[in-house]
Amino acid sequence: MPSPILELRDVQTHFPVESGIIFKTHAGTVKAVDGVSLTLARGEVLGLVGESGCGKSTLARTIMGLLPATGGTVWLEGKNLTADAAVGEARRSLQMVFQDPFASLNPRMTIAETLAEPLHVHKLRAAAAIPARVAELAALVGIPARNLGKYPHEFSGGQRQRIAIARALALEPRVIVADEPVSALDVSIQAQILNLLAKLVRELGLSLVFIAHDLSVVKHLSDRVAVMYLGRIVELGTASDVIDRPQHPYTRALVSAVPRPDPAGERVRQRIVLAGDPPSPLNPPPGCPFHPRCSFATEVCKATVPTLAPHAGREVSCLRIAEI
Image (cartoon, rainbow, N blue to C red):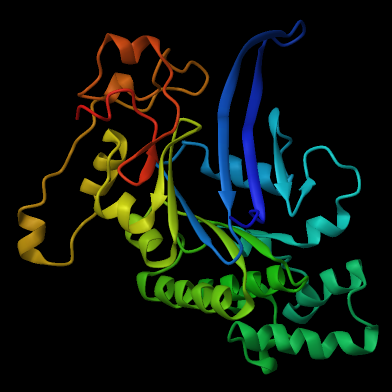
């Protein structure tokens, strides 16, 4: 098997919690990401799904180095991004598209200035060649050249996300981390952005980590899907396996909540309603983190932490997976 372009090895991102105003004491630790191991192949789209608060965005920012990893390592093309000092060139190969394009674009800069800035900073083009490259980037994402002199507030949400994607492409990265890039957009615009991302992956040979909470969107774009719960991966496999034939009880509940476009199918859909709320990452339960909400849990689940293991053509983190 060829080596992965991106590899996460037991990545942890913990946040200490302090109490007191003058004399601060350690009150606990929020385990937002708690031992995630993943690989991303060249040209692959890896979907990362889970309910709000499961640690998806924290993991994305840890991959990018925007948050320091408490433990574990992130490797990009053989470079340890969590330890190596000389990672400047590697960082150019790893770019991010944020959820809210309006917040991620500088409102005081025109679109031409926004797209030109990374080229100036990293000196990837001669000054005279930068305007042509800016026009090329804009055309790549469907922004007319006549609009390059405008500011972010003059564009719609979908157009702003196209601009954010163009900025991510400016440094010719090999890996892009997209953190819920379509969740703030209308459904029709979501389809346009998803098709754009699929086109860019195909034509530019990009590898993509695609984070979302909409399983139908993830299935449309992803080759493989990782399901995250309380900072851990609980199921990992091909998109068709995980979404069409889920195995982990949590994944089954997620899939059962996806509405069906067919009225007849929607009427017979069996919704799995999980009991209670997700546990706090500040005080996770012992054993399997899902056991307080799992109808299949036994005393063993309350005492033993499961690990990802092969099952039915994918990897599942469940102690009773062979029985349910």
